[in-house]
Image (cartoon, rainbow, N blue to C red):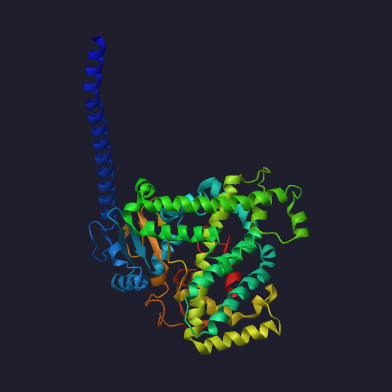
Length: 473
């Protein structure tokens, strides 16, 4: 009889537990929605002084971006309609004030406002707490330790390695030239830059230009890159839990596992090789010092090095930050040369003169091609490889026209419309040879912020030397 009563009580207790769980779930959902609505209300209030294009209440402006090659033109059109700045909504809760005038940009770049890590947090499962994501003392310490890895003395030997990667790409192009068939340029350039990074930074011959279809690491890198972009443009995926439970989240975890396994093995083998080489100058006496050597041998003022986890994060960050941006820049430089055969001839003649019969550019030759260098810079003005940069305000920001933006707001500096701002540049969409002859620099006001290198910001000068060398080579 007692056992029967206990069983009845147990049965009667189950619905109460289910009800309690259901109530807690409802409370959690209501609380989250309340917080999100408060976030949306605050964002709308912060943007009251900045009119912009109409947005959908749920999708924001996401449906305006088709990812068909016309997105930047749409941003440029909005920039012409709304001078100085306008809000862009990525879904119902995330809003950026998009600024595209040098006087507005100057206000942000001369401030100490921290970077907004939203897009980088989407890449965090791959690159961990690397230089792009870390903050405070950890960021300062890592930046100081990494800076020596991009000194000119370290970069000089890389030129020959980059040239070898370029030759491999050109050999592939020769076979295409014989068929008179068109092909997608960016994919080839992207593999070439990836090949160069692997050789220069890790002394690793991946053969990715000839084995891209079978190399698991290369496939994982491209998979992660595509999923990061997908997550940014799909607002439900901004939520970590939703993305984690989605098929795309599963694919990202799988790809990250492959990528981490590969880089972890490269790091492990290099650590073993360096066991008897405890000093950087001893390593340099035997072979070229690469980025991985710098990471493994770097020591701070307390003689402390970086942990294995930190080294892994910086390696993956280097791949993330230096791969596609350099490939994009190179692709558009080639496009600009193709659009201007007269400039192409001048650059070719200058390069041939600098080579003086040699097959390969050397470090010293890079200073002998000033017109080619200026052509590259002008191409980067028209086609910046990084579309923008973002900050999040910690205090009220007042712009030169008197409009203000409260603390906690996101600001995006849009480089494409900034570099094509008609109030600054004469014929902004034209590639000016006058710039290559130093004329434009004398006539343009606000030069410091009218054109911004893609490396401008707190992480500048760590990778810009390496990227510039790659572009020139």
